[in-house]
Length: 435
Image 1 (cartoon, rainbow, N blue to C red):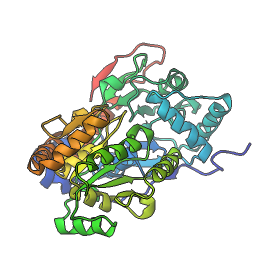
Image 2: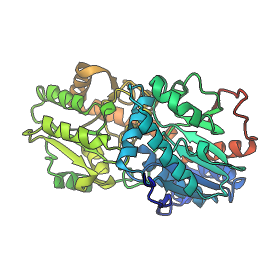
Image 3: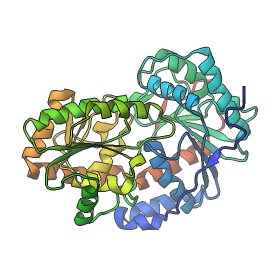
Image 4: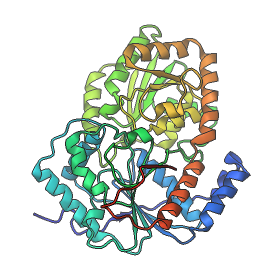
């Protein structure tokens, strides 16, 4: 069998520069000063972020802003992605689903192929890092397959709701995870009950100056949306997410159809980024395309069709209501993205969503088709109330879900991990430390 990586090295992600100083006008002097103070003791620290893809999904979006900002405050940070193939990513998508509770089949052949890939990544890894941060299941076994990790500290970052994982998936992943010095989760309830290594909690955040979230004049937002074929004079409901079963895209279509019975002019936009590590996404897209075939007011839009961060920004600003009908959710950055635009939102009462959106205060939380449709209709019928909820949501995001807060948390985590001696994997460790 050939080398699964084809002899190639891990792929380094090239990123635009970002300056912390640019955020002063958004977050204020005190926040900038606190970050610089935390960074002073970490200047020159070598940190590697290791993930599965540089495009599509929340992890890539976070790292594309977080890595440049860490560099700007004096850390030596690099982001590498793993060059997997379709078979590998089929298996790791199953592991991802398994962490979120979906039953998965882990055959011996698939396990072996996963380990072959991770062994190749371990062999390609440069040495000399102070900290390596491994994201999600795809490269989770790299640490276990290194002959000697030296003085490097290893962190495993889980971005999904792993509170009730499929037993087979967790039994397979847990030994690899527990070879790390620290695990990071979004919420305390996501931590599997039998995980034995120290845990830190860190919530994700959005970059207010990124192309997706920066200020956009109203006329330009409307022109951008009109160029996509939508009628800006008619009401619009959208969902922005991967085409993923956990986001319930077919349920979104049904919510739209029920709301359209009350508001016949209502259009639906389904916007998703197709990621290289998610072969399931295309199958969901094709299923959705077949479901809405012949529906002129339903638009399926992806990055493969030229829909970039700028278009998503415009759509989130022009939409009358944004939905996020997740049935399981690690965090759901799209919630903070939407609220940052002051747009009304209806989202599932799952995972990290209620942390960002308070029902009746900064948006609406819902469960099931009837609740979602009723909430959508309520916001369409009362646009003044919808704007009030959106404004409250903007204030909530500014308070706790901007990238500068995440940068602070990252610096605190790195300092703590570097101060802590390497833990013996045979000794019990403290359960959770808030980040």
